Image (cartoon, rainbow over all chains, first blue to last red; front, side, top):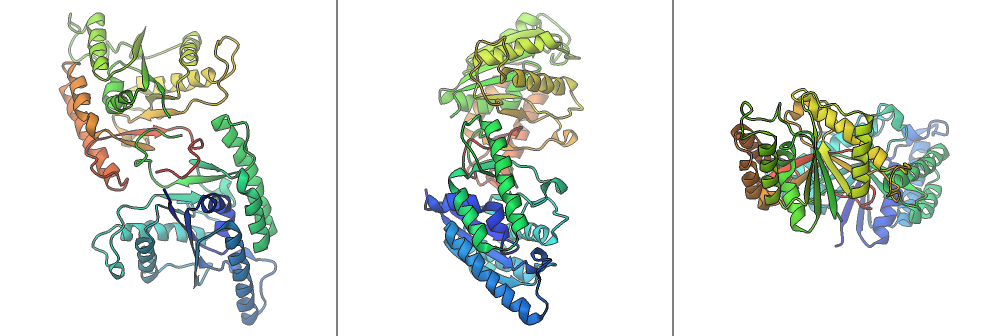
Length: 244
Length: 238
């Protein structure tokens, strides 16, 4: 059955690094992939090459957004949405939380990928995004919330968290692995097209190799060269049985 | 696909209260279920002072009777003493050999967490984790050296989950199996309070399962913790 995935990314690059391979896998199997990017992240992601003037900042944001769109196209994202919010700090006020809940009701995704539920002390915007989702999916499934009249979401949508850049400094626990060996070339192309921060790109390539070793350990599979790890926000229910 | 489950229970009744509905659900789809009872629970799982009715043989008969209702394939009584449950290394290797021979898809046992109301449960979890690790290895004593991965282990909900830092990882809707589970529990006479608690907990867990979990029509559920990440499934699953 065709599934609908919603990815909510604090900054331009987060969804490419955090779940680019899984997006390519789902898109490649004809599932619908929707991405909401809340802000640019140029404030927190480009520390050394940041713009020196307001005009430079605007130009850099635009250039980076075009690269981000290009990367999304490579991965096969169906719909991209950019909210152009202030970042570092990213603040989701009640109006934006309501808007995010409204989008969840409109899109009615089968599941949501976003930042990990545990605090990311090294990037407050990631924590803010996770917290915003926590509130918004509650609003989306609260029958008394109006949300521009869209029908209430049938349940609190299942959520999965990206592996943070510096996972050892957070309480991220990998609960689910996706084998992305067949899609790593797309992910690498996308990261290259985005061309934002080579250190982060290198880190996520290394992570995928490490996670693949763990994947092979857990599954006993002979083949898996690259994998992405995710945390789970809730327990497995709808599957109906034991799953591993 | 789960074709074979090995259930390891510290005391013979534990697995019925904790997983009776789920086991019945699996057995109905043709899954083999083998139960290993580490102790006979004569000290802590006897409803009244030892009498003829809850002698060793009497108790084992009750468990076999309850198990047959749930379509359990086999029950093996290892006969260790309970309170405290202690199994030495040679015992652990023996359990590992049984697991290796049975080669289950998954193991179901007590959750790998503190249990302040019954230390035998946490002892059992530790024994099973050790044995499963050995059973998954290519240890020279085993006939079956084909396993190349850790056997996934799922944990029973403890009696007092909040006191045990226990986190549910999987909820299983047992609505159609609830009657049979309650019927099986009646085969262990004298546990009216356990029976009531089991019922209440299934209702309680169904609230999560049918609400947040989105399982429509779920009235009774059992909860389990998981010890291994989800990999084989290949997709996001909830």
